[in-house]
Image 1 (tube, helix red, strand yellow):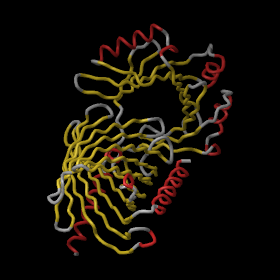
Image 2 (tube, chains in turn green, purple):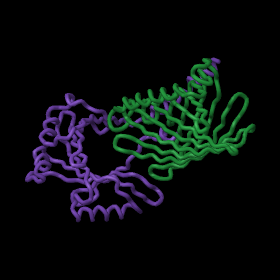
Image 3 (spheres, chains in turn brown, red):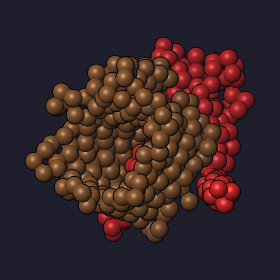
Image 4 (tube, chains in turn brown, green):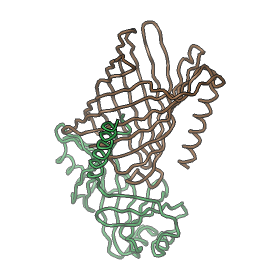
Length: 227
Length: 192
């Protein structure tokens, strides 16, 4: 049932992404997440994310295939547990694109709900991007994530699971407003509770408010490690 | 190039080694009906409920067990057996209204004494005894044979500024017999 849902969503995501009329970019998005508990209730997250383009174009008919490194993001976020299921976090991200460095401040609140056969997480976050050549960009984000075990009632060591992210990003830059929507169906495997790998499609759609749909389709590979 | 490669390789094995070293062994997996010991199947069949039964095999450090889970009249039943099918206990999700008033009073007194504030998330009644006693108890709601009743509560308790989730066991009279802190599974992949 869960696998049918996952493959259904994967197909739907791929079909929406590949039928888009506007410009698109696709590639690989590997992410390494390293987490470490610092003291009672406090933890740190170091994330490295790299984007490689495989194809891009103004439409699918005019696509150009090429392997091209685009950018790397490195972030450090400190998190404090503020309740049984909630945590507040804040940190800094550095984006390295060619010889240009872009800085971003991040603040987030996460709520994780546990049900008998799934886990649901709500993430509310804001970030401010400082690019020397552009106006400061402010984003308000909301992400809902569901994690469904494929065996038993919870994700145990050496078991597969399905994780689905849906995120809405409101961007304000000068007088312009943009909405980006992300849908990310992932198939995960937990080697242990503190070592998990997830693979899936990260589909991002924006500019549709201006009738100029821009799609980004990434093959997403996430590795989560807790030290 | 080779320096970067070996550094990446070192990082991979270091991270993998650190993460694997902290594992607590606990695993629950679904069982097909044909994999369930006959004795356990017969006992659940004899309860006479028509609901769909889900079977699980649970492995942990305390020992392995087989569990049948099903819902009757919006109450969750969990019947636990050992690996050869001997009945261990029966747990049923209940509400305050299903408990004797004196037991509720004792439980509330104990929780008020233990925690600055608390919220009860779940209540289960646990029956232990011979299969014939528990069968009669569930079918006829009474039995002449001896059996034990315990209440397991999942409680969110605050002590000072610390909020934690506990599994607290009370006996039939509402006297506290055991408290265990519930350790949550890692949520990093839901947070970042």
